[in-house]
Length: 155
Length: 412
Image (cartoon, chains in turn cyan, green):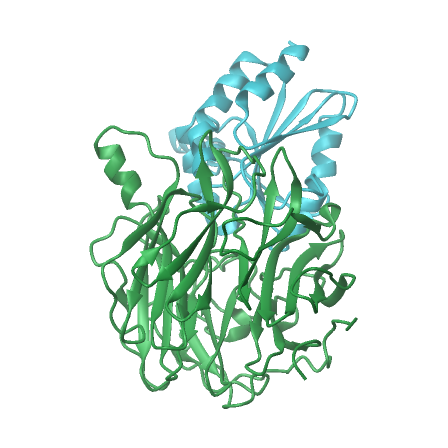
């Protein structure tokens, strides 16, 4: 009985990791993320399962997180609810299960994009660097070097 | 100067009979963007996320869409492109994962004899490899079972179909075969390839594929128009040296003679990413009109240019729309000196299709004005000829359903 309970609780603990902990990103989520990490250097990486260059780059985000414990790294996928299990598997393979993860949960994607970056037409990958003071720098396409040099300021 | 706006707000309430055989199986996540009340195998037009139109020679409007995992077609009465649609016809026997989002969508063409061809891409695996299937109808009533456009291909997606007035049909698509071949030899290969195949029987069978351009963008719709019968013009996002994803254009001098690859504009957009944002093209009176989206070092936003010499040179790109309102997904249509340009914007609350009209072959334009709007998810807008020198706006929105709006302008 006790062993079963332990097994059950372990299983329950494992569920968020299996699900990648991906939270639904809706209207207002971006402000909530910024509020939650206010005063800290925040890296919001926008990606999708449909974006081959994003997938190539994913493992590097695990390294960035390891090397920069001060950074708040948030992954936001533009994939919908139906892709959450595949997202979780992909993030697990890249060693990213531990990172804060969101997925687009409003089919009115223009609205979500507008909140994140009014000039963003949906091209991926894209990374928003939010300095502790609130200044936002946009990195278009694969730009791990730009992210690393920005991050170095906060080591 | 003529104004451009919908003639009537009667958005052609295209009432549609419920599609036959709507089995309701539990489970299976509903695709995002689908209207309320649509079951997982609901094939109705209102349950689509992307709708592609084509006009027949007798001014019958044909639509194709994906809903419930199947590809459907339906058509209006002859001569009434904004008339009520008939019973939808399913083209695929079993539900599949069909590309139906934004630039990846079913293609449809109706040739001068009224023969209808539809092409769509199904996902073959979890790695975004696809296969293009084609279904054909000689009489507009019965359609052939879908057959692969490329029988032994690696990955084909983003199909486009277009017919000239003399019985030729050209299919283009984005093909990852050359990428796989290069990988097998241990060689690098950027992006995918633009391929094409002719059909001389209205889309029933296709000649072997030809590669029109190596190193194309993997995820952007290709634009195709005709300078003259047998002389298609194609524009697409290509990867130039250094990973620059700018636009290329190719004009055929004969069906078997694709011209050289030209560069529409040096925008210098270096991006190792997926813009998911193809260009648009229209031809009339010897002029090629092109509009495209870029975030290049040289210019950012939505742009228009034209060529009077078959693509050898282009005018200086002119900015279109409001870049702070996500202006994108432009559409061009030309008839003589009349040129319509439409695109989508979002102001934080509403998405709008904006439009402007030129009466002098693209030299000057009316002010941009809204043509239609919605406060929820929407498809890309599509412009098509009404068959009488005028323009129609085709737009599918989650909240309002499918709309077909006649636009002002055109030959009286």
